[in-house]
Length: 572
Image 1 (cartoon, rainbow, N blue to C red):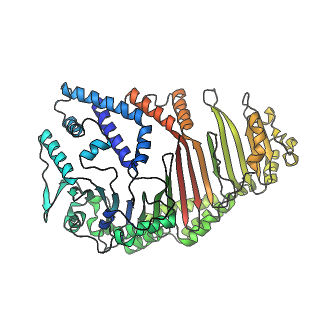
Image 2: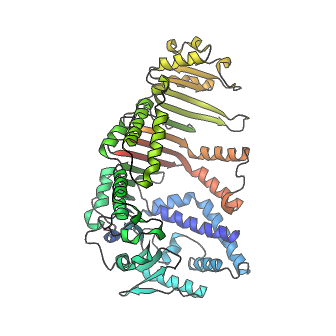
Image 3: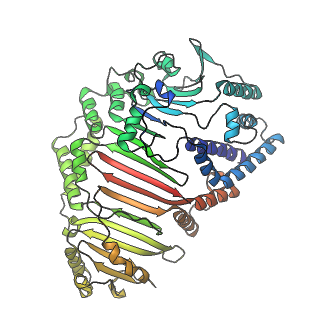
């Protein structure tokens, strides 16, 4: 349906503009103070917040939008076709189509930064999202509040509909509420900002004045410099960061005297009155194990985007988990399709999980809502009490490097390198010798070069693919493909990691996209373009995607503070 596609395209490009406006160029200096004036509305004890302290440079936005130009060109064509269809009467009586045309008229028929600026929407403006209690508030800076008001008025006139404004102490706002809605949506154009929130209609007396800026926080994030301090501590830039205080959220929902507790009920999908003091205490004890999450951009240039996410753990748990990480080398970057690594001491991991499961079995939760956790712990303890083979207990990690993949073969052919890191590789080889007749003749322990594995030793015959094996002091490696055998020794002797990385992966995004498309074609999975988009738009998006994307990388670390996830994406 062309009209639905057009609405989706408008929404998609709006999100693109918004996403670009939240980031900026890479910086290496510490941000000294909050520079986002919207933070004056955010209470210092808010349960969550995400904001940028600096606006995005236009050249960075332009670089990202330029990569999507083929998509923007097709989008403009589809919008033109929609406008022509509308003029021909194809969408007569369709209020959503009428609204779309009214909005497009205000945008001059094209969604871009220049036309948005005419409506008072500045892509360089500050933004903030935070919690008022547990309820979300979004504030977007405007370059001209009156221009946006006038545009809305013109759209209303074209629609023949007047959206009634309400007023509180001289400040106007719109609200969308109803008897069948447990909450209301509230929108207001304030001085140089657009504000949007959602909270229970019953909470208007307590929350509306705060939302409209008539009652400002006694202590705000504007004065505490919280985000700048967070950025310095966590290595975030000033161009997009925030946190979620999980303990604060739990208190808001569970504590009888919290600002939020009174507004929650069965109609909101949560009934706090059903929880007795024992349940409240047990829920809070669970949350205390991981009290806070933080996130922020660490790099943003024209050619690279990186972010870091962290879940802070209770000190004892963080330390214990960090001890489970082995020294297995991390995934390597390069020209390969995929490189990935898992670095965990399987034996110690099993013992740790069994210890925690047994502890819960011995001292189960009393809260009725948590009984399933007790049952799961008992089942897990029973499963882990089964002895594991020594070769499994000695497992320290697994690494894979995929250099080539023939997806068109009858059986997809993968070439590259594979390694199993173990505490005692000779034990691993000995077990394999007992299970596979003839394996001992390879004599891996006394070989200094990779050994070709005879076809008769392999359980599955793979035509035209030579496989080589080699053993190092702490790993068993395989090379799939004769041309990769010379690289196996260096692969096994890669530098061990010491920073707590237990999972890492690096992959060629465009190549992964091609493989996925080929698999969908070969196996007839979802052959049509998704979401009803035209072939031309989907092809333009696919072409832009493959032409601009380089590699993506993720590294997950267990540290003395908790779980840290670093992710990055490069562009060609």
